[in-house]
Image 1 (cartoon, rainbow, N blue to C red):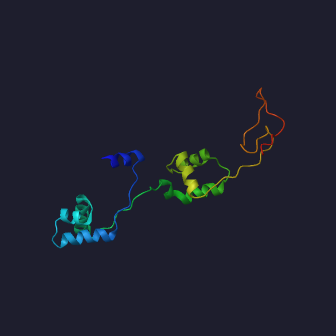
Image 2: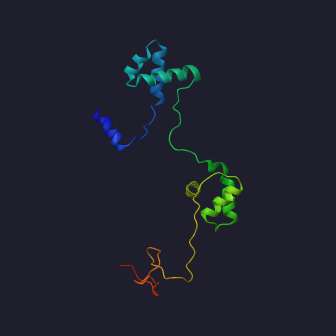
Length: 159
């Protein structure tokens, strides 16, 4: 019981599936006359796993593990169209791209689009700042004096 609490405390991480070799040995043991419970005990797996593997073998003819982990974004179905919009107008903001997606009936949120662009390594370059208040080089933030007015100089923040 104590180990279960430790696992629960650390968070549930999906474990790797059992090897195909082990699955084959369990199914073969059941086919040779062992009960599912005996086969599970012999190979150190749960009875429910032995039952599921044998049922899958009988009904589907396969004992391979199902794919696990990750998910697929619905935006991937529209990848070419989204990337074409960005290629046509590379200076669009995320909100403008989402608006263009809605016009084309492409589902997705600003966050989903941001993650899509990260996966596809689409970046936007920041333009050089022309005019406006001076900017601190390290933070990219405007420098203001105590009254809130922008200073007319840049502070060198390098050591």
